[in-house]
Amino acid sequence: MKRVKVKKIRISDAYIRKIIREELEANADAVPINVDKPDEVETEEGAWAGGENLVDPVDHQEKDTGHPVQQGIEIAPVVAGEDKVIEHIRYYLSKFDD
Image 1: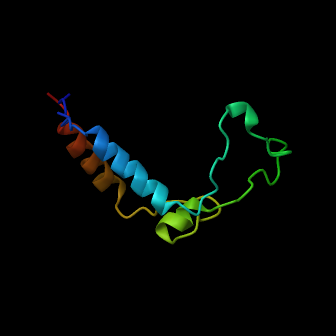
Image 2 (image 1 turned 180 degrees about the horizontal axis):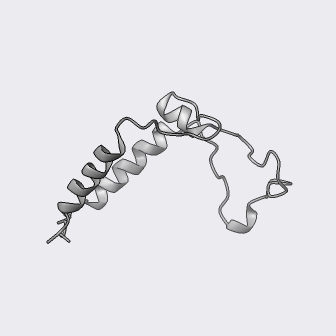
C-alpha cells in the first residue's frame, strides 16, 4: 500500500488568535456563556428527557448549505452496470497495490 505524505504547516499564535477573533465576530449573535466558573452554569430542565431536547433547534445543514436535510432513507441511484462497477473497483484498488 502506498504511503501518502502529509504536508505539515506551521501556524503562529497570532494567526490562531486572529482566526478565533474572526469566528467570534461572525457568530456574535450566538448565545454567549456568561459565567466565570463551571458550577455557575444552570442546566436546561428536561434536556435529556427526550422529545424536544434542544433549546434552539437549528438545521445546521440548511444554515450552512441552503439545502434542508432530506427526511427518510437516501438511496444513491445506480448509474452503471455491475461489470462497470467491478471494473472501477479493481482499477482503484490496483493503485494501492505495491
